[in-house]
Length: 294
Image 1 (cartoon, helix red, strand yellow):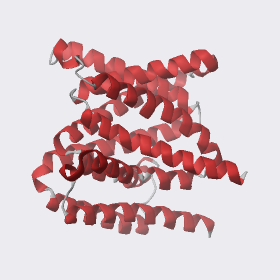
Image 2: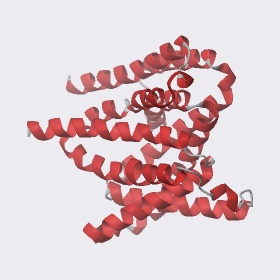
Image 3: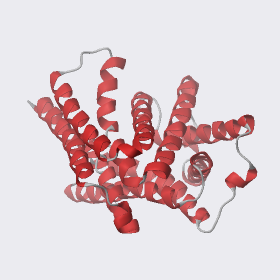
Image 4: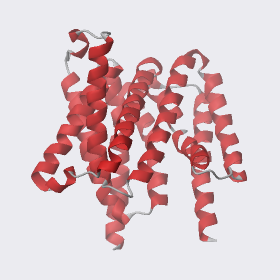
């Protein structure tokens, strides 16, 4: 049992590295955010569909009562990824991921409103620390105000998506929900492109290594990583999963430094702000865990 847990811990860290690498691949891809996300969601849904057909055909089954919520989820995650990749294009990987780190706290702040409970005192304390960290990042990179704002919108949408899915996973398999949300997001994106008339055929043309980057994002960073994450979560507590997933920005920033070197380096104030944000999120998790065990 201990061996299973150790293997699962190592595997889940590897999965989070893969999640973080999607931001680097998105930056390498020459496509704009909307075409990139349409390719990602469509190919990822095809990958899951093939997996279902080969191994678990019953995974296609979804209760009709969830269809509308799944539609909302697909639209929200689609817009989240569009804002995420757009922020990367205009502000860079490190800055975008530093703002995405606030997603866990945004989730914690929205949840009391949805569940109609009071915000607890310690949540305000850690929220204040996160606001301080974000403020330092704003000061350090004020010229990237637009990109920071887009990244924060992306973090907010990620939080809304997480809360929506947290309720749905009690009624359906997570991988089934993911398949239909990816498919919905891709189809809505295609419909938007057709009706808006803002994109020409050239916007979807792939250049140089684009096909490889997109396939890696869709099948490795999405379909494969999600499927594997569900399996290893059986041996890990929700608290452990939360702590590891919060390391995604760290892994992503380290990977971006490895790829671009000095070009991706930020100011010292930026890294101080990022450490404060990440530290507050981790401390919030530890404090909640301590309260639950006492």
